[in-house]
Image (cartoon, rainbow, N blue to C red; front, side, top):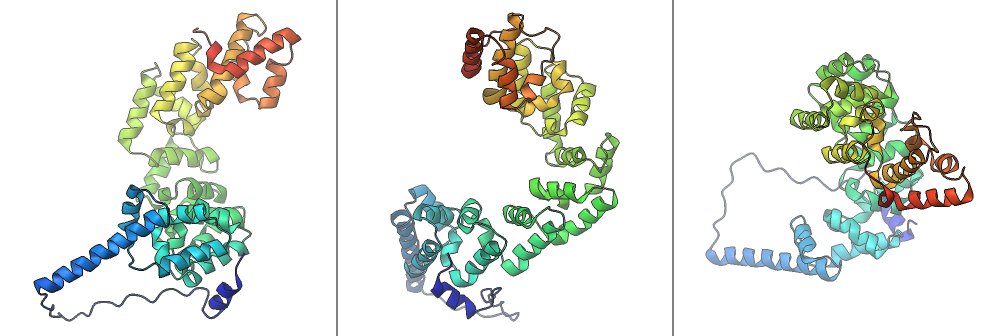
Length: 384
């Protein structure tokens, strides 16, 4: 809730008011004053006192650890509690809990030096005008508070909104990408993609997932490379392939290729899997090895299944692959599932459908045993 005194203060200023710009140094050479050893000591002493007060405030008032206090004190310093106390009071008046306020300060300590009615309140009002819950949004991503509403946040929102399906999604994208969405660098790249047939929905996907892609100097070459691999610009897979090609260094790409090769995949097999699902090159090497080790090494199942259906790499081992594999393995061993049945279908089904078809469709005693296997996950798995 926006308090009365804050609104009255706000109405005395423009919603887009910014702190006065710092004065530029005069272009003429100016003589530097002479500092006696005593004056230098006085300056150093004052700076040390200021740092000590700041550290004390962070630890005693905000409950920071010594390490967190030191980290925050490298970014801001103050010698009285008046300004930071007023900022904390402002957040409290807007409905933030003490722990939420302290979390925000830990991530963006600079906010303690703001006049909140000028630098923060207009941003809250902008969020509220678009239907956002202020407390939840700011607690989740406070970094946008450091950005100018007029010069950055609103232009970024309007730019993203051109491609996003709603105001809320556009704002969320603009806020979460507040450090990476630079319109001047992106306009020409976006124009290039649109000209090549990339739909607005795919441009939004890039803005939402990895906006830095739209600043790549060699984006044109990357687009041609991805097209050459068989991806059509109008398809969603094209954008994911572009992400995979430009979201990592070539050395990291080569390391992932080598990881697949250690499990017997040829370069053609890797490329085939990539065409089927470009996400396969966005998974970590650790995840690739873990899934391969489980599917091929432990279960002894056909590795070509993973090549044909690389989406399996995207599932959690503990929450999806292991529990369902224990059921499938049991059903195969008991002749309750055909040996030539699809190995991957059970992993793609919804929880409700999986339970209905592979757990609850048998006699009560058998169902109880299977359910126990399913809930036990990896505990009941046997090597293939």
